[in-house]
Length: 119
Length: 110
Image (cartoon, rainbow over all chains, first blue to last red; front, side, top):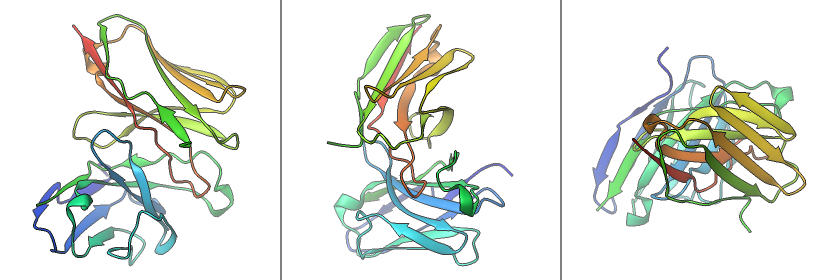
């Protein structure tokens, strides 16, 4: 296992188009997180999954955004009707955490990110 | 007030210098803090973490937490050009998501 992978690495699209990104986490990691990072800022949390269940969504995740993790393995993040403000690096991270340890140390491993440019 | 504040820099130091990177936080409930390093156009990678009390040392890196002043520090000894990156502090939120500061961009000149 070589770590978290993301595809594509770069995406250029025109405003109004839909885009979909894929994240493959580290095998057997039950948690998967999506973050967005804009220039000069730290990553900002978007949403996360525990296995296939989406448990939390940030207020940053507008109704144009949807994420899935259908079999508790890979995940997709779709942005509909893209806007120029969606231009950012979209990062995926995975970790393993037990149900009883929500506040325990939770090391997240990040993928290389998908850089989205909306023209 | 943001939950995590970090001076974005940039910070430029000569090779071999001791570097001090700092964060302040507002939520006293944070139980541990992570430091991530991010090279340009790459994803963040975990450098080290420390629980909300005491210090932790790992090679040239030392992380400190001062709970009373809600202040977190990362020290890099004998800095190398390969340490040039953005350093992000990140405590975990209630759902285990990480709450990142803006990051401090460090440049170590040979």
